[in-house]
Image (cartoon, rainbow, N blue to C red; front, side):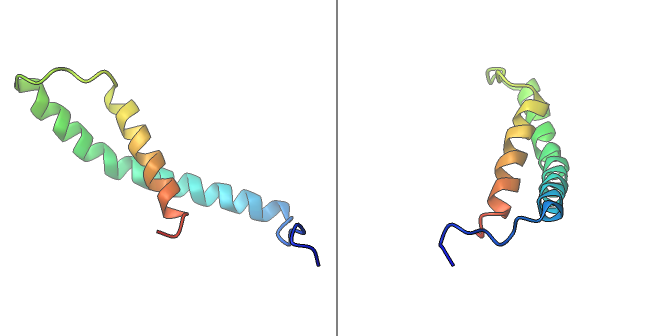
Length: 74
């Protein structure tokens, strides 16, 4: 058997992997949205400069990093 042969060519496994990633991403998004919103509310009253990204944009980036890291075996 060659090193380049793949055993997992089943289409259902790809769909399942995609679904797992989307579910982990959704959980990470909800969890990361709370501290991001709290941090933005605190910054609103202070003298700090306004961030360039929206709350959802910042949360989206954090959730993508969290979801990707969860599948890396860290």
